Image (cartoon, rainbow, N blue to C red; front, top):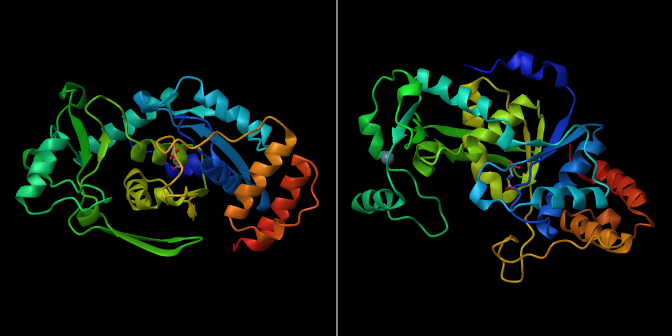
Length: 316
Ligand code: GLU
Ligand code: ZN
């Protein structure tokens, strides 16, 4: 099945943004800056703002983290416009998109382990550069054959997208300008469903942004290297490409991105003063210098002022 663009997006020609946290822990200074940036961008442009919990990777999710995050957003006055959605509840759409790609011979089964991939790469003399993604060497593509009935395919295999050779995706980030990625060389055939049956972030995010009619994606720069993959998938699935704005990451004292792994602290929402402090820190990180001497005394006043500053300072 190809998702029909017109029926998906027609009702939402207006700005629709979203914040899509993975419930792997509470909001910290970094994820609050992302939430605030996407909220301000939506509000400054009179748009809607949605929250979607990206909880497909069950082993990484922490029970109760979703409610904790929602409580923190409310405490910060970052209210959303439609009911919160959970990706774990929308798996039919992912499955039918995968089947559609299968019927068009655009995916293939892969049985490689991390070790097989590493071995194949080292045989080809392509050792993984530090901090860079491992490019899939295409091993299982040799067994690619015209597909039959998807329901009769083996289950415990990963499904990879077969990229055309030399595929390059270029797009203009609203903040960072022109970006380009040679998908075939820099990423390789990427996984859409893992061998354990979990649909990957790349597939799910594209389907959900499409189904929810998202027009503007404002998120952390750590996701910048995923965007070309997502734009390519949007094209295959007949979905429109939204605007992208990748925000600067909050780094810790060692220059590492704040995350649960680096033991980032949950933001303090115990009092209005603490919330104001957290918001102010996030805004300065986003570069909203006009907020330095804000007269705001309450969270509501602060957000109203921040929205004006964003509208004036963020280039459209
Ligand atoms: N769930 C992703 C994360 O927490 C964000 C997805 C997105 O904004 O595209 O890193
Ligand atoms: Zn393989």
